[in-house]
Image 1 (tube, rainbow, N blue to C red):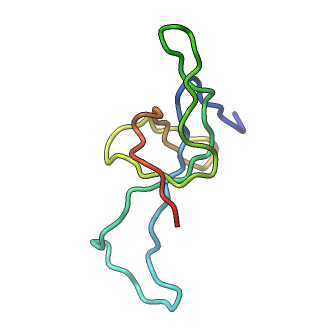
Image 2: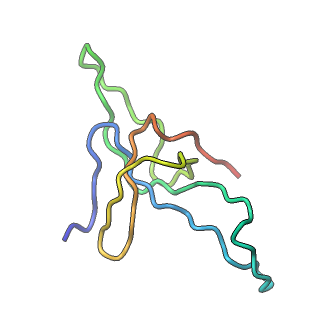
Amino acid sequence: MAKRLIPSLNRVLVEKILPPTKTNSGILLPEKAPKLNSGKVVAVGPGGRDRAGNLIPVTVKEGDSVLLPEFGGTQVKLGEKEFILYRDEDILGTLHD
């Protein structure tokens, strides 16, 4: 079994961030509360190539929090964890505190 997946070309491996089900003080949050479809970048590929053969680097880096599309990506399971593999251009943006 693979311990680490290194995406090819302009692919990005993302671990989805699950929203908390209760607050720090123990109050349960409703399931219908608005949720942000976000994830944490686990691994990135080297980037794609243009027609001239020049390298186009990936726009995100490992550890970035990103905004994900509602649909898309390829489900990948490594061990007990589930990840989603996206193309760089499918990621909607990065999230900053």
